[in-house]
Amino acid sequence: MLDFFAPYIALGEGIGRLGCLFAGCCYGFLYHGPFAIQGSFHPNTENLIVLTRFPLQPLAFLVGVTNFWILMRLKRKVRVEGQLGLIFLILYSISRFLLELLRGDEIRGMWFGGALSTSQIVSMVLICFATVLLSYKRTGRLQHAKAEGNPN
Image (cartoon, rainbow, N blue to C red; front, side, top):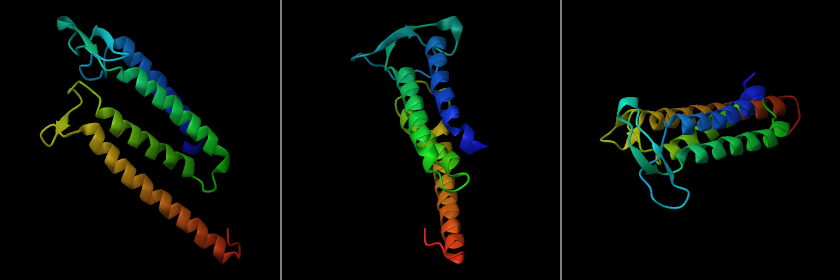
């Protein structure tokens, strides 16, 4: 099922980041360069502060749409059940890890003296898990094909 839904989950995740833009959450670091977003960014609505931030939410939207496009292109090339879903986990985890570097809020939890967020730690675990499982599934398929006399 994850193979079928993976592209649409990626698209939904990207569209959801537009909701973050309108809610003022999941914002980027303080930034005054091109495409900067000015708005009220604070998790506590009683103390709203107007600041200029890096446009993280629109970037996350573009990443979600790009992941959707990549997964739709790969959908026809899937050879192993679960492959597309695992590729989605890898793509999402890598993009989430990198996007976390651009965030300006610390509400999501910071570890190791602020070096990593909770999402980055979870992303690293998911990347390792999905990569190992994808390799295992691919290797198992090759061994099964060789046993049947099919070298592909």
